[in-house]
Image (cartoon, rainbow, N blue to C red; front, side):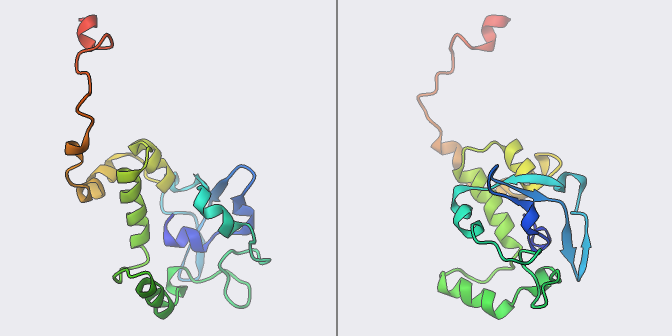
Amino acid sequence: MRTGEIMALTRADINLKDRVIHIRRSVTKNKVSSPKTEMSVRDVPIFDDLVPYLKNLPKTIWLFPKVDGTVTRGSEAINRDEYEALLKRCNISYRKIYATRHTFIVSMLKYSNLSIMEIAQIVGHTTTQMIVQNYAKYIKGEHLRIDRNLKLFTDKSADRLA
């Protein structure tokens, strides 16, 4: 999710029964609005690793509220000192918080069984073109890792139909 989408989440957006997060809004500079694009209004699957963190949601409406319980300002509300300290403890070089989204996309491309279309839908892109143009370039040498036992000529071959 985009940072503003995360910061605009409410308890009602989390459906643990169906394991889905509903993305319906975003927040930037104290303003709640619709997400970036029409495709950004979406349902995102809740992966197994996230479930424990969602079991004890805060009693406020907003998942990441200000101290008074109202909606946060957006990514501007993330304490940079705390974020930098967290990265340091994890032995990760500093990068903007938004880079976590990019890291997720590249990781899903490289290590998951998800198709490019599924990744595009999860992250709210209209087409797969955005994924290919902006993220695939970070994956080098994947073509050399293919299964070389691939049968090039099988009964499923298009030659049979010609």
